[in-house]
Image (cartoon, rainbow, N blue to C red; front, side, top):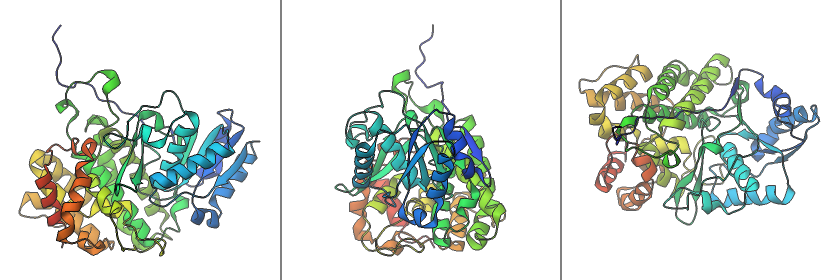
Length: 427
């Protein structure tokens, strides 16, 4: 037998999917198939005011499932907000299952609650290294139905949950295939009232998911792993490529329309929602890299910036904005690692954009054109950072080694500093 030293195996996983207008009205039936009697719905106060979680609770009750609503999910969740949600669920439990209603914040919070009410321990026991102990969930979790109300995170498809660690001013998360929801119920009608600013920020998260996954290291370039050592992110592979290409094609035809005419264009909302789900199926297996790694300290160290369409009383850089702000410069950096993939991505995402003479500029140019059209801030300076902040941002990025190792051209600290410097303004 020849000893194999390079990886020859890739993995791919995603939950069953129910997609389409009105799909959220069938959650009671779906949850009843798991034999549950008592379910906790996790959501935020804004969605409660809109009546969506209570409508889902009523649907559950029609199938003789007791349902209660927790509305304390924090937009851009933190270790503190996760811990409070877990505390509530432990005090009011036990629960037979969970329904997450909202953006990635609600779905990620529900994943953490499911884990920490199914098994003992504290949040940091399971958080990724080097920040946490990265303890794997010891067994199966309870049924979790994810119901996204924004077209962005793809969290309904993925096996990870993300949070801010307040004391360290950095984002990190928990990553394990057992966190993946039992079922994704994706109803485009739930996104029709999203403000334009939220549509733009969430949509840029889709863009970066698809692009980073598509340009990630090919799975065979990783060292061979034992089965128990394989992580959720395995690098770009033939299956993830298919989902990411389709996501980019859908975005090219629908994203600007969803931003401009989102309250009336059901087709644009449907295609953007589908793009988010497809990108989640891609990056949730292959991984993301530099833009996401940079986005975590950008969001974690925010001082005073308040984005359009979000609550006015709390400074924040929404996740989708944060990951997009350094994307043009990051893809200039990574171009040499896979020129053909960067060019293919540019042609899928911006088929009508004018082609640049310099091939390295084609994908950044497509991104800048899109970002300008949908009102994304012009670089990290537009959300409050200056050149003097770069030495403080770089360490937060370098803590994201799980992500940086997924890039086909692994950056040094100096490389990351240069990407931040090149992203002070993008146009």
